[in-house]
Length: 393
Image (cartoon, rainbow, N blue to C red; front, side):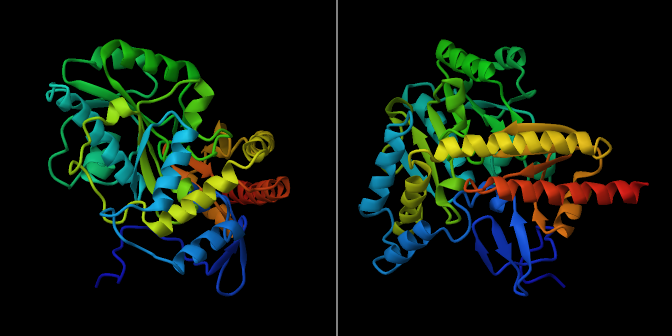
């Protein structure tokens, strides 16, 4: 007998009925410290009053019209994203996977519109995760997500993580672009060096390729700048975002230069729900918070505190923790013990964290986290690591 909800998740045996800031509460009133943020989604924390106000005010006006008609809130959000990024145009989606699908289609269409339809290959990197559609699992290249779903979608040659030499050898007459996460999330919180991102820009310019950034998880202030690639001083041609831009409401977007998007004419792509009035009302509210003067500086300061305290934790538990990695408020603990055991031990201490590749545990707190919240999270992780050491002994 199958469960009412398709059993594709190994869910923890706990549920939450409300949240406030960086805390969530079970129906019985038990408090948990949320350092997963719904996988980097609740960027402004739970029940942020400004987001609640934006959503409820819009809900009393109009929920949905579809993209057959103009939507002032959507156009406002597009303009704000353009004003604060490299982009000149935006396509709205409901999720990161859809934003990546649009990015992939746009890159292929760019070359087809320029008379080179054979250029449809997009080079990706080992450990990548770009979504769960047939195209994005092919782009991610991980066998565990591809197996059993028929032939792999063609056109995604893959090279080792941050291996520029291998990348250059892979470029050929069919290459359309390069797709990369500036900080890999599911792949184990692995940050690409600024030098490598700059080199990728040079390679794309020299070979007529489009550079595509996946900032679904590392964008919207998570690293202390609005987007992670800003640290390297480079810009992509196309960028996919989602998660944090909706603050918990399903919202994604594909941002692009006019040059990269010129092939995407009327009828070439679409979405019934993408960027509807409810979603973009919340998206605008998230930008209100994140773009407030001093907010990103606060994220940088909290990130430094978290990094310092994680360094102490590693020194205190060398039998459990191998390495601390990441950027901003997107940190990873590479474990010596199984990361599933560390995650379970943290849950016992009422701390929510998330697993990732390379035996890593992710810490992705809401961007409104305080020093006190970080201190409490480290205390709970300390107790979790101690419990694992005791069990091992």
